[in-house]
Amino acid sequence: SRSYMYTEFPEFYVWLKKERVLRPRKRRFGGPISRIFSISPNQSEKCDFRKLLHHVSGATSLEDLRTVHGICYQIFKQGAIALNLL
Image 1 (cartoon, rainbow, N blue to C red):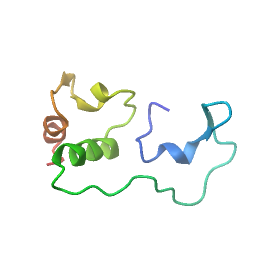
Image 2 (tube, rainbow, N blue to C red):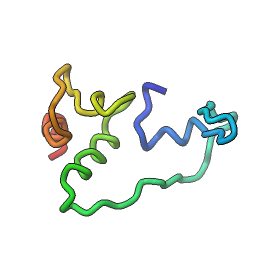
Image 3 (cartoon, rainbow, N blue to C red):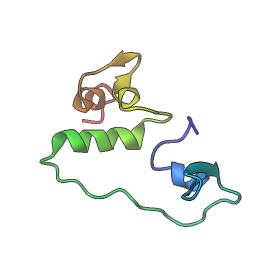
Image 4 (cartoon, helix red, strand yellow):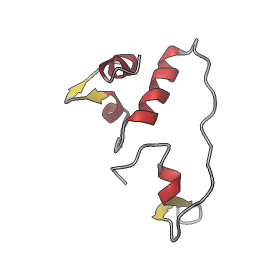
């Protein structure tokens, strides 16, 4: 699971509500899954957070998302700039 980006995760794992645990899918999911809501560009920090979710694989914390090439940035915008997303 550390090799997947946030948007790819639902293709390979399913949330079991009763057990409150993620399990690998038994068979490959064929259709699109969309659970990410739109964000106004005026909310820059949220937009930068979302861009990082789409481009960083294996992140397990907010700090992981802000870390690029071993440098942990203070805000998501700095991390997005370091990845040339802005």
